[in-house]
Length: 229
Image 1 (tube, rainbow, N blue to C red):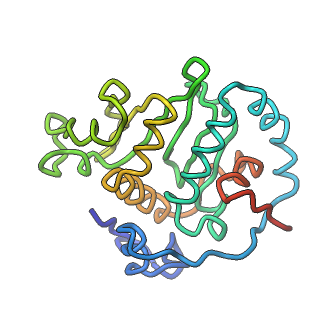
Image 2 (cartoon, rainbow, N blue to C red):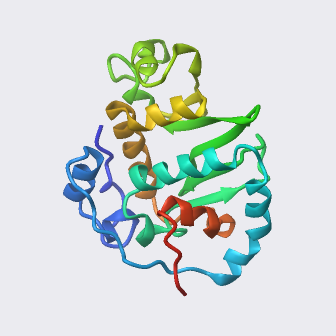
């Protein structure tokens, strides 16, 4: 599925078409290219300082190392040009106050993309993707969910389940355990589906969650590269 990034908007001023043309986006989605990102990041020192206490609290959790490792993979593999689009087109929240008690949450536009939660001393994840990328006939029929495909993307079938959030063509995939989350991120079909969903929502315009962006978490999503003002 290729997201329609041209409908009802001006590509030159809205969404990722400010930085990437449709061919570049499609090639990245399909794993055919590595996009050139900015060398440095622009950041708000005030916002960085605002969430340091939450980040330090997260570091005291037994799940901290696994959270940071998974976030590093997600930032590297699932977000196009993350430095250039940081905060304005995607953001990551640390111990957000919204319902669900997530440890971290990645957002774009008005949409949640990815969350990690505590599961005992381990972690579990919620990935939001398009339902049509995980049905046998690529329809929006919940009865056509390809459970065999989901099970191939994790370590054991017991590690994966799913929900149907509100909204057209939205599918929530729940995965338990660090190893299964890592395998899901490495699976070709799963990774492409994540990229498609993320492109769809990053192309909808500016991120509504800029004020909750945690730069300390984002450092890990971009390989520890600390930005400059």
